[in-house]
Image (tube, rainbow, N blue to C red; front, side, top):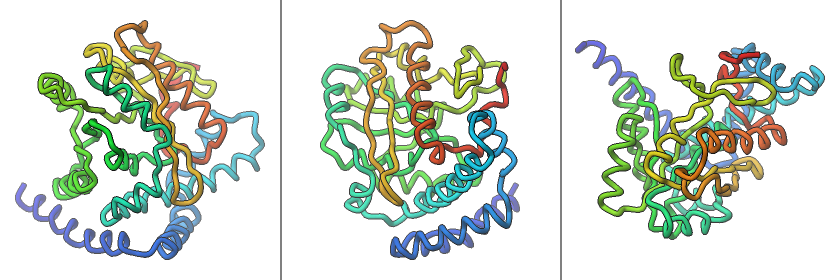
Length: 297
């Protein structure tokens, strides 16, 4: 175990300086690096190309091969941008981040602060979810939490947490979610919990199926279940890419009090909103995931 730990630390010490240097680049040079990365990832390596092509064929069978190829290339360019933007978070200023990731209707969150015990914000793998931390630079009484999957390398895991801490967001693992919510309710701390909600549930946890882009697939219902259990409000974070390096986000109400909704209704509304965005601009969805692997039809 000692040698493995040393190796993980060595990898971190080698990689971190490169990440930090990239994060300090001016944006024109920064996106030039992204263009170079696109050539490597798409043309030379072909990273998960087969998965992306299969997903696009399933989601858009009515489109021509030429149309799907155009979406495919645009997606890879966006993916490279998003990956580097995650690295940029290492050194980006609060002022710069707030300029590049704009919340258009912050009042949708602040109004719910007055009415609810807490808010769950359901997010999709669409546009940019990395820079949603800009929420902390708006005037709210809300403490933001992001639920994440731990990185196996503990040094990189700490780095991920430290980055979010610098921008005011606290990262918690899935095991910490309910205890954190309960603790905040007791302390009367108004909080919002950002959850990526469009991943496939693990085998054995497939309780509900939805029609997503023409396929019957199992839906992750954990966000809704937690909201119903605690009587939270639920919002959908609708993020749009305005242009390269600039995003606008809007809160869309899914439920003011989840307890008042029939089972899975909130989850259905979330996926309906997400699907509408994907159909409008499919290049901004994360197609490298096998979203249809457990489809019924």
